Length: 161
Image (tube, rainbow, N blue to C red; front, side, top):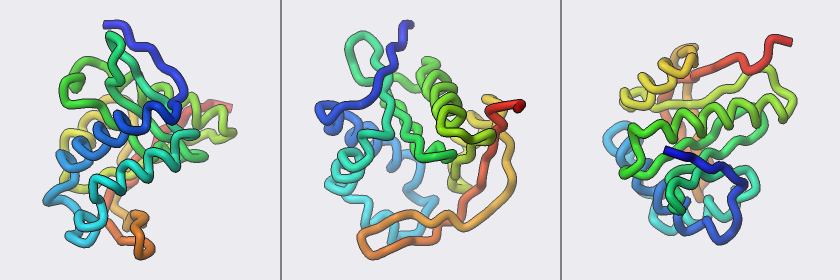
């Protein structure tokens, strides 16, 4: 399988929003506060994908947008792969790319948040060399401010310097 990576464009926003929405629901329903589920509407994913297009790298497989990663400063904020491309190695390619973006952003360590109940993601990050630093309250953005979400903070050193 050949994966092509490139910066996202505004034309990618609908596909990114759909992958994000579907993946978010798979990973978060039943694992986050109801208030967060209520504000994560279909429209919210489109709005957020458009707002963060400049921080997004997409993965293309066979001419199809298969996944994306968003990096802000030292945080790997979002990593999602379409259901049809899960288990194919796309997520590992995107995560490795995110680590390089964090390094280019001038940081020696990357971090990300994973909700407690998302066992699939937690195992994936651990297989990729990320370490669980333990639980913390993640502040998820919503239209009404921030919603506290119990999560685990994962970290990985991206530079030995």
